[in-house]
Image (cartoon, rainbow over the protein chains, first blue to last red):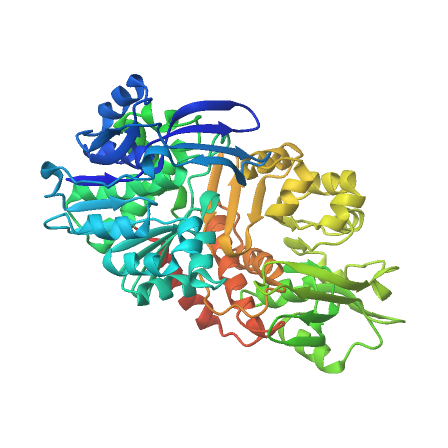
Length: 297
Length: 297
């Protein structure tokens, strides 16, 4: 089983072509939905009592929501705007709301999870919650600029206790204070993580293990409408696939990185979560097959 | 046979770790040397009477220099500085010198070349010189921001008469006025070019043909010291390989794009041209084999 811990949000996303207000978002939302195509995950998160029923119903279609707590107050909200090229996002407003005093608890049924994904939460919280699981086979965490800037040492501590780190290229550079991604990955490995996956957006990803690099180009998409959640969908697809295989062989991890890219490519094709909520398993299998042919030479 | 037409320069390259003054450079220099590992190319270029003998000797080791004209005046000079990350270059000075009034002539022996590479020259000159060849099987051109900004229509005309275009991602976007590289490639194809290769620096390249995309990640290099000439080495390696195979099958063109990436990866590992002048064929074969394993999943 896979457990996903992270934020469920109400997002306001401003793209050059459309504005979505209070739409379902959050790192854990994207990761859980993306992973669900490989097996139903458990979701640990908090929402406010303003969280729309229809979104709860939607989440429940993809994930076990026993771990989703309703707290008094408003749901975490994020408001961001993309530029014309959809390459840069500026944050207009972040309201932590119920996320602020959330003390996550792992439901009894989730404690046996062998696969655990810790989204871009407070690194101290991520480190603590990981201990609540009884027999983790493979854990993965993400982080963001905010934690790197405010709690760098805790980010490093978190990375020393997980099996793998997924991180954006710019954040990997910021965290490790280097411009070269190989050097960045090596530094994170020195802190104790075995597998590093650096996400490069439209340029795909790099998986590092020991002395090996596995570059996986992105599945090229002509009509990108909303990049929100692409990285979280990547992570969810990757660990979801691993969990479905009950395997952490290197060859499986490589395939998982490709599935991550595939799920990210679906995420950007539609607004909000709808790039991944309307998928069928056959769409994913088909794109994976196409991808294999695409990169072959 | 392959003929390379373009600039031979004396470069001043300022990197964070070293400054090279009046070192051998130029698009045709890199492309010709890079291609030479697959077969000796003919070089059409002009230098001034200040061009050092040792550089002529060096060029002659890799290419036929019958087409290199000595003109009265100083050799074309370029002076540029890289930032700390080696990702951005600013031009300090460009002195056209003998390049200004150069009327290129293709030596009789080169006219039978079936493969022709037209570096980032004046697009009108590129279009005209292509007609001097008797039976071109595969032609390839590059271009740069300067020509896109000053002679866009001539760039488009040039692209309508060649078989393939290699171009940087930023320049492809500028030329086609779009942010999406698939759309950019499609637009260039509409102008009449069959194969488009978009170079993305450390992110590798995308080859477009018809409805097909072939992404080829870069060979990851930990110690990049000087990115100068990487793109020209890419183009030279690519068309050099094609020329050696006497083939323009799609599968060969894909392999050629990978060889382009490989040659670019060698170019950035040492200062100036010395990343590619000190290579053996076996180094290239070995890295190609390693690359194939690296991307396999």
